[in-house]
Image 1 (cartoon, rainbow, N blue to C red):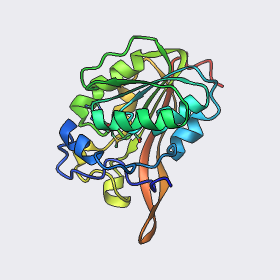
Image 2 (cartoon, rainbow, N blue to C red):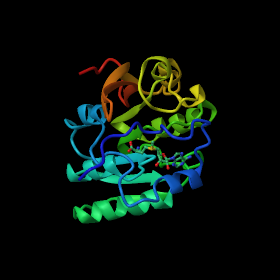
Image 3 (spheres, rainbow, N blue to C red):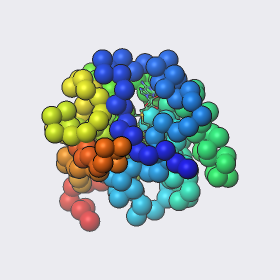
Image 4 (tube, rainbow, N blue to C red):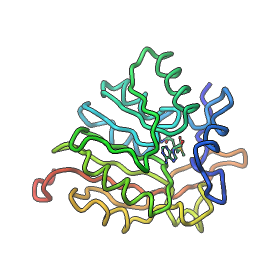
Length: 220
Ligand SMILES: C[S@@+](CC[C@H](N)C(=O)[O-])C[C@H]1O[C@@H](n2cnc3c(N)ncnc32)[C@H](O)[C@@H]1O
């Protein structure tokens, strides 16, 4: 049975989510996150033609594995060895092949133009760390490809459920949009997601940014 979708990044209220903290968090045999793709990732990606995908902060690999099941050739990056071991086991239990890289995304340099999809889901880094990650992620998108950023929005702090409680770790749409000027913004919004909890359903507010490596005039 899959774990229910917990609010990603909800632990570590002081924001110190370094590798050992994540390793500890992933230490149990159960999944920390849902084994299913996030709703916004599903909505944005399900219709895309499979190609090469990069999942930054892949965790237990729910998106990497789902993408691989759709025929994508996926590379997942995370600095938690424990999370990557779980992702590898999960992929192999489904007879799926994904490439997993142990690396700190704050210094990881993806090959420019190498991916048809770069996914960043619930990677809640403080802005001084996140901005350069976005620059490198945007540069890694191949012509015609897509950068998709989904995560806890700043608005979630006052009006949503779960997520980090330190504002420094929450996404702000204008900052993210401004950080990827080479791409064409297709979607940039605060979007609501229902979260099942023991006390009933709650609503979380996420940032969703979809940006494509194509001229603005070639809109669909
Ligand atoms: C909230 S989880 C999200 C996992 C996955 N994207 C998902 O949606 O299920 C954030 C992940 O980012 C990873 N992470 C956080 N900071 C990182 C860093 N600097 N370098 C690499 N991975 C990092 C953590 O280990 C964790 O697996």
